[in-house]
Image (tube, rainbow, N blue to C red; front, side, top):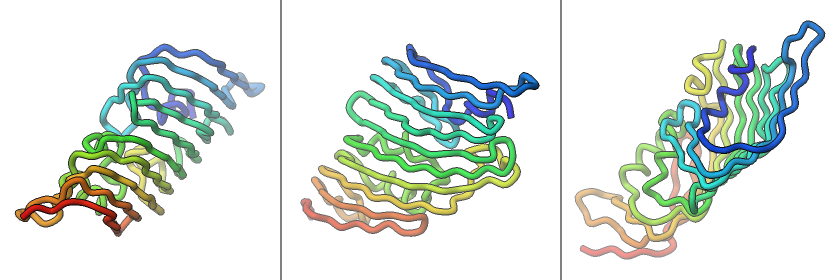
Length: 212
């Protein structure tokens, strides 16, 4: 695997960077490992597929290492400040360029519900995603957590070709409008705790308003 293959899952960045980069080569001269510890100022990042939207950042940090001939990528810490919303993630990719296995977990704080689609790609938890995105508006996700495991045989198109093996998470939201049974009036100012996996989505409503 080449350097581009190892770093491609990090997406593309257009922002000022500072930090350290450490590389190790084999006797043949081939690159065996590459470690980065970076901090970034304001700018944009274009995540890898299946995410599609460029993200505007206020600041970011990344600590990651590609090893074993650049066939393994371990992200120890990825922190993004999206100008209010914050994202923290870590994970690993094994078998880059071959049979790919991915494991990741992330936490999101203070994200407007309207921006959920920027961080929740199609193909990941579609049962929950296909209901949430069109039916929840306004409000803020105070905190959301997600854990994910997947694979792609023979590379399978990289991250965009991942099959989901495990998916689970929780969402705590406030001030949300929920169009739960159109054409009935939506519930407004809803505060709720949600739990989801690859096939189910459960909502525990704590408060809200419903006008007939």
